[in-house]
Amino acid sequence: MTKETRDEEFWEITDKFIELANEQCDKHKNGKVSTSILFSAARFNSFMYASTAKNLEDFAKDKELAVEFLTQEYRKVLMENLNDYEKNYKDYLENK
Image (cartoon, rainbow, N blue to C red):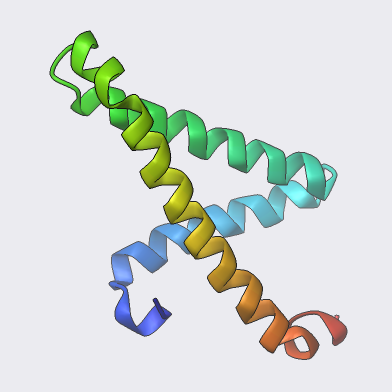
């Protein structure tokens, strides 16, 4: 999915997270920031999933479906972004 097909609110939120990550990279190692973002996404998505469950039984019953969905989505957007960086490597990284 390209930036043009997503709504502006989505991109405003995304850009804020990336801006915060870039600020953190000025103070901390990139790997630590990356790991922190990944953990934060997992923690927040766990909260979002738990908050939509009717009760603990439903939470436990459908947990694997949530894991499948979220990992598939992550893999999809990760591949999209890796392909974008591969295609635009010189523009994104070599001129820095």
